[in-house]
Length: 96
Image 1 (cartoon, rainbow, N blue to C red):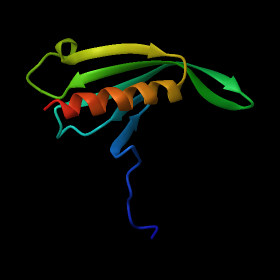
Image 2: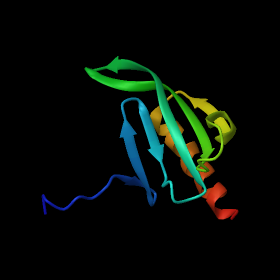
Image 3: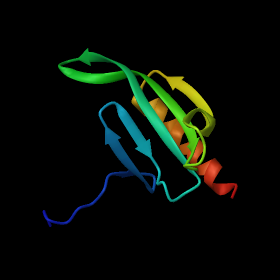
C-alpha cells in the first residue's frame, strides 16, 4: 500500500502544489484553477493562509499568461478560495 501513489484531489479534480502555488484541475481539460497564497499568519504554531488569490485560467499554451486568465478573485482563507475554485471550475468545464 505504501508504494501505491494516490494523488491529492478535491471534489474529483487533482491538486498540485509548488511552493505558494496550488493548481486545481488537470492540464488535459480546457480550464484550470491557480491559487496563490499571498500571505500567512501564525495561529497556535501553524502557518495559515490569510490572503489567497484565485484565478480561473485557460490551459491553451499558445496564449500569453495574462490572456489565459478568465476570472480572478482574492479570498481571506484557503477554505473560501477552494470553495470558489471548485464552483468556477465545475461551471467552466460544464460549458464545453
